[in-house]
Image (cartoon, rainbow, N blue to C red):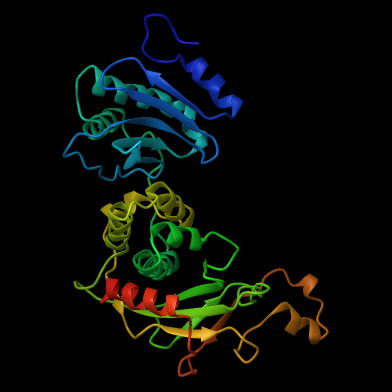
Length: 331
């Protein structure tokens, strides 16, 4: 399906591959070795090639075009990926132009991306501002992720983290579930987004982890800095950086946000943990059902839970260790 004498697939051939919805890795003739990939499971296309010794990716400023460091067969590589299927066909020439600059003009991959984007203009949709509730929620969850990575290991931490986009509880580890809530209020008040969010799964205790953060002005830590630290912890610990980035992307993070001014956070108070048991104030389907309410006609329930001054509970050692180390990220 290649054009004889041409280093690249024809555009029509590339479109045909897309329609098969199968993963492919197509080497592009030339040096260094570059691979064009289609990853239908994670809805990405892109290029992957060896990283120079001192090559460090930087954000592209475009929501649907990412450049990051990955590891394949223990080799440092740069991966350029387009993440919006609506522009796969239109962005294929951009990937070819990057490959030409790398193989024919001998540019580093990161420089080739920068020059190609500058020449072609903003082909992909620029990113929007990250909503504050996503920013604060992800900040709290990353503190727990980093704490778990340093106590139970990177692989276990990633497996435990279901992420903000999941309908499951935020974390499952050592037979326990954690629901992590982060607030900027001076009171320990959190939004509960559904009737089932504070319902334990069968056979597993559920713990509500409450974090209070406050704007630190010129001090403190931004979400972008916290993400960089998480990646560094996973990199040093041999963790799955691709898996970590998948969770971040599902939560709404785009690397382009790092180029914009962001709030700096530090902890307002020590983290608190509450056992989600019968005496914890909350709303559940069973509670409404016992009140003879036809919950089938209630399509959405969202409420604020005020736990300020509410007694905390003893909690498992793995939670304690993760929170002790995780809270250090926002001191």
